[in-house]
Length: 480
Image 1: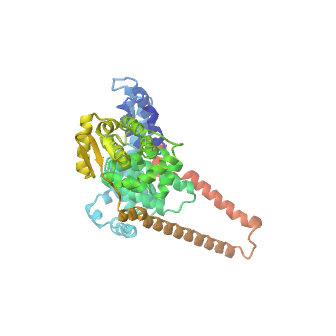
Image 2: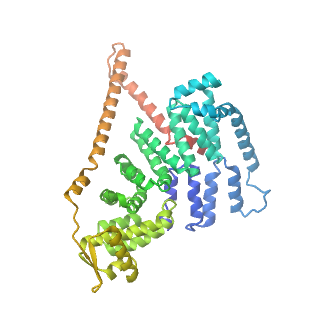
Image 3: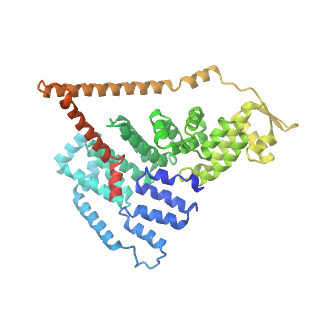
């Protein structure tokens, strides 16, 4: 199963702290040697400030039972971290007292300027206090104190007017909520982050691609643990810009999109788009889950689909995000096979279809009877011939019209939004050109004078791209 493990690919888009649960899961799956996974976990977390935890991993790797024996440099590193933590605790004590005051909490509103004015007038608030709060939140996160870090970042975002720091702090807060398994808040933060990404004007398409790629991978934690996640992942990943990101940067996400489509009985309408994308990306990524969809809906190979469904069971059992959906996927996979088989055949032999569902004849008959009863299918069982006779099933003309036109509203709004953004960009360029004409003092545009500002703009764009990552908060924590 190691060939289907996506931990390395997904981990490249996650913060170090978020990769640790994935490696912890692998320790219990025995896909890789136990010592290799422990070593990888130690290498990962040794670059954080979780000194005591990494020391425990080091002692486990080397079989050290004496509690007085530690990893090399343990005492020095621990002393540095504790000193830094104490300094930031003292430096941020004033603003921490403010945000923990019940009176202040009641007075804080959505208007950031009003919040700052209130604190300045009543509590001697100073702007530099926000930087201390941000640094202290970062330090708490780096040492594994995720819950306090999330609370600090929440208050930081209420007060800060710095857009870049607000985006960075929201990434950090989302990571902290995920690691504390606070899924309701994480779901709301994920939606806020998505809105900020879509509203932001990036200097290049590559930056937008990077931000969406990170959001897609971080969202897996939320979508596969939140009650609304099965609908949420379908709604988000099938949006054109995110589907394009998946096809361009991370086609392995198709595993999770396909699984969500299979286990979500309410969203069968996305199957056509899913099949199309899986076919298009079959050269870039394949696994038993995508091959199951392809075998069933493209090749109509029921024996092949049955075999792939067995392989899917092993893949899902060893996937950190999908393991809880193992039984749901198996049950819905059988349902998909049966429904597709029924569309092609009018008279179905129960023994034959039971074999294709990987069930014995008796269990297969019970499963089919329950399905017909619960789904209210137009079918009846002939006990003499041991067959299922299907009635004719046709969608009404109204249903067909709804299916074909339901995406028009979303696509129209997306097109209108893109046109508005384009118009805004053109207006900004015209204003910039008018400003250049005024400051040029009547000099002709063109030649060396016309190229110089263009070169400076290009250098600025390159610097922004090289320095900006999808999460400056995560980058800073990783560097420390």
